Image 1 (cartoon, helix red, strand yellow):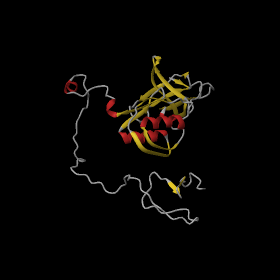
Image 2 (image 1 turned 60 degrees about the horizontal axis):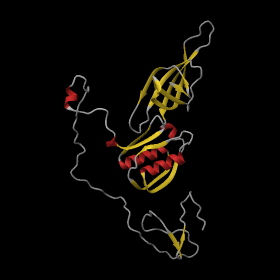
Image 3 (image 1 turned 30 degrees about the horizontal axis):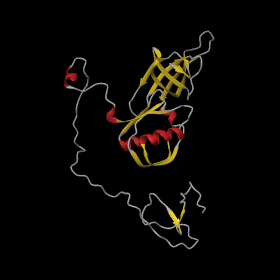
Image 4 (image 1 turned 120 degrees about the vertical axis):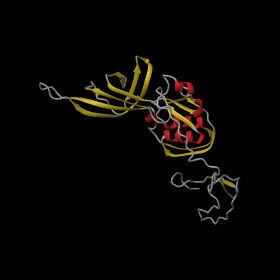
Length: 263
């Protein structure tokens, strides 16, 4: 185990890995370390050699407790209970305020990484699948992980950040389980323990009704007679992509609290 690049001796090491957007976690204890661990430092776990990385992330907690008693006037020592999260924690250093129109999931994620993450971490998008083209995605002061989560739910994908800070964004069915469920495997001596199947038909329906909601229509034009003083006009329908002309000359529409409405 290394903290900020320095090897440390730990006890009670536990790592929890998930192949989903739920962050991987790592916990361990440090007894009387030469340097106290601090929140925000990098924590990396290797097995045997540095080529075999089991976990990499950021320290999110370091609880300090007294350990032992005074002996012969020596100072009491301390134990630190350290908690780490994978690099998804560092991904959320900034907030995203952006609107994307007719772009692929990959293009959106790449733009988020380029413009709304800390370049010092060096996040990459090598394993981001293209996904579908999103008609419109609006992110209003959202964490990058929340934005990627939203995209994943729209296209039924999964995602995570690996130990090398590369983002994986993939269709769920393209990542196989490490084993197959078969009758022979269940009957074998080294098979799967505590296996059970519980059919549930409580949510099965033979008819579905959709009420209310909106859909995009074709372009719709409304015309108003201006008197040189009025600054707003009621629209018959909720606007989507808004363009304005005055006397045939295009004007820029303003959004309250975001743009000035001069001109």
